[in-house]
Amino acid sequence: MTLSLAQLEQVRLILRGGSVVDWYRLRFDSLDDVRGFLALQGGDLDDPADLARLEHLRGEAARYLTDEHGYKVPPELLSCDAVDLFLFASERRGRRRDRFFACLLLKVMHIVHHIEARELAYRLPLSQAALFDLLVDKVDVFAARLQADGFPLVRYTGGQKSTTSLLTKLLVKKEHHAAAIHDRVRFRFVVRRTFDLVELLARMTRELFPFNYVAPAQTVNHLVNFTAFVESQPAYRAWAADLQLELGEEDQALRPLNEFSGPSYAVINFVVDVPLRIPDAALSASDASLGRVVFALAEFQIVDEVTDDQNEVGENRHDRYRARQLGIVRERLERGKRGARDDA
Image 1 (tube, rainbow, N blue to C red):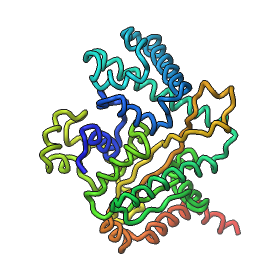
Image 2: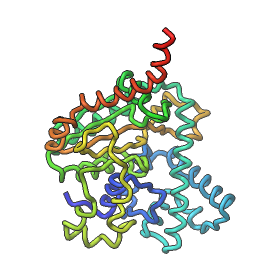
Image 3: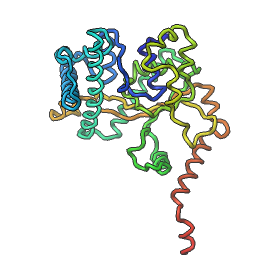
């Protein structure tokens, strides 16, 4: 599979744990590209309510940019169809100046949508378990499609973590609050070869979740050197000057290895706020202004088969990882134990 420049940028965003708010342009070539991207967001361009939602988000973004920062947004970007902003931001319409302001609008729309979707989630008569079920179903369907297409997916597992696992994770963290857990639901994909990891990420951003809701600064990547990957292939090397950031930026952006992992444990791990379209039956008229989409945080772990096998040897084994975690938990729980013994 040969990636487009847009796909290359999206894969890179995941691998380096970057933020789309730092981007200065998009790369949508056509309205069909935009339609596919908005479908990943849970939107439908044939639905008048979803089009109205886009208009609402643009209005909120324009007000913020004007009132708080004094920007003078070009009138044509406020009067065009809101969906056309993606083409202006990609320089498929208008001038470079229009690209700049279209990007400003879309960045703020991205944040406003996220905030309002959170508010919608609080109002819905749906339990957290029901939302997790929607999330698991969505990823299960994607994994089944990979297998049906003959993609080299060796193993796939996914679902909500056990209460015991969550308890241990909270007790071992210094920020021991449930809000600090980004991986209540985890999905694990094992592919045949290291090279397949890049194709899997590209398919994820095309079929499973929109790249703009990958959580910044949450990526662990020990398996794909993006700079080497680009420089090893002439087609990608020719695009290097067109990338949002110079090659080599990844080396300064990676999170350290989990302190409880073995010394040679290797994986790609990242977190996504996955958009979920809520069934109309669960929405009330008072919620209409907040849209039809909520978000569910999920952790994705991807690895090739050889590395996965190596991760289960020696100090990398999960039982050793678990023992190291539990040892720290006991240390924290038992502080002051000596004094308690003396009192007895």
